[in-house]
Length: 372
Image 1 (cartoon, rainbow, N blue to C red):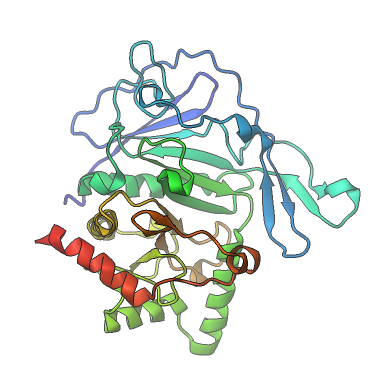
Image 2: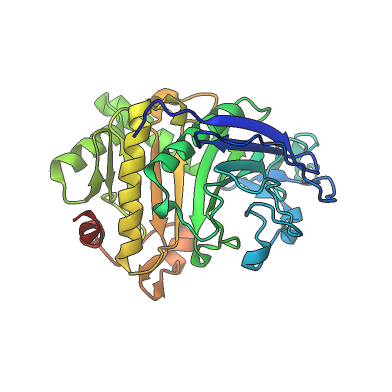
């Protein structure tokens, strides 16, 4: 793969003022000057966040999202390029990778209000949900999936994730940037065009806070990063490794919670996507595609999954962070879902129906015919 590839970035605006960004990896991309001719009302996000006094966790309230687009027919997909008589969120007739502000955001820069408390009682902190939510379309092909992208296109997407991480980290109120993909109706996806999202949160997420506390305690005791030691142990053992490259290893975590769960971890500690080198970005594309294609072969059907990047908070703890991608699925058999039991949803005490070693073996066996 060409580590010196060039991606052209073009910034435009949609009819309601939202930004749309085109990332072209084609050798001779067309000018991106199409005009969004839809008559759209101004986005009116009314997000707020409230901190649970019993757990210390922030919860977002975004009631305006009740009217968001829900399972449109394929010929009216809002993520496909615009066709004559069928305008979409992307005014151009074609694109490589495109990013635009979500029309129904959970967090937005335009929200207003003061930091206060619910009912003025001083118990439950309340603040504007100030951040940003973006949609990332990986391809203009409605029927493709991330697993069927070319390595070159995956590399473009990695560059896009890094670009958006850098830009979103500069916005007012943003504390953490989370690029992720939800795929499959079983996960809750309502738009089937291959796409992901990026949330720029106004707080550090509960999971990240817990991981940072754990990393801090481990470093104080051992002088090393916990994920670095986990990675080294997994590479020595090999029993849970799913795919490996020169710069990344994908493995089932040794205390996996989900029926399918994989961590994709760089061999070098970096805090976020912006710190990855060109060769590391290339190698990720190869390793991750092998993981995804093995996942789709596991049950002989497209695997529903969530895949998201764990990155450092914007304003600190970079030395405690080790960038990695986590993929998990609720599908425990071809036609069976894992439903969270009372212990799991109520107390966050997980019970897995398979061992991590069994999960890894199944993924390797599914992927083996694809590598012959």
